[in-house]
Image 1 (cartoon, rainbow, N blue to C red):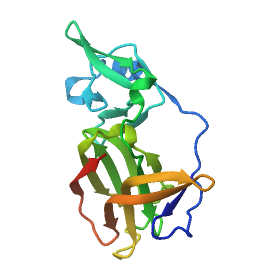
Image 2 (image 1 turned 180 degrees about the horizontal axis):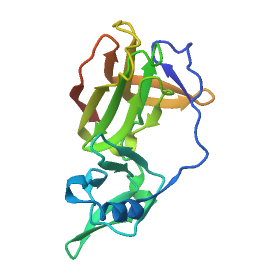
Image 3 (image 1 turned 45 degrees about the vertical axis):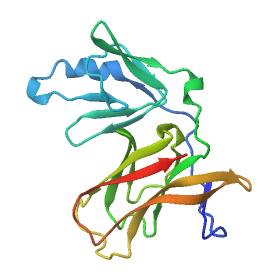
Length: 221
């Protein structure tokens, strides 16, 4: 899929390579392993922003998984819901019909880096309390439809940017940037994506060294 910016329709970016299948993530193995470590080493597991430390013997298919610096595990899987049974939490797969977007527009998350790797930032994107994606400097371009994570009306979008310097800084120029766009768009012209209404534009650059946590409001219709 190509992204063609609304102001530069003749400058389509290379197609993003997609995996043919998604890995299977078995959560109960992680939970069991955690049970044998001491309290000081305990970690937490979250499904769509909800703590599920007590869930046992549950498999999750086609999910996104992130592990933070403290070892906490965040699973993003909108096709699953968490509910209570006798005081304990469990999860079930949501019927596919429940995933149909009720919004009138399709919403996309798109990354752009003019000098790959130079900015040296990781940007976590969180929408309405649900972790969506980590966008890393130097990684392939991200083109992700996020319609299912939005609700009609006001939505809270957070960007958590972490500076990543391993051995040395690769640049200190403010002209070397990593950008993240969120907006509406459509696929047409042989699979090209036209971002017709960029609603949020977030940017970090190589001259910056601090970590950032920025919050935006997005009105979806």
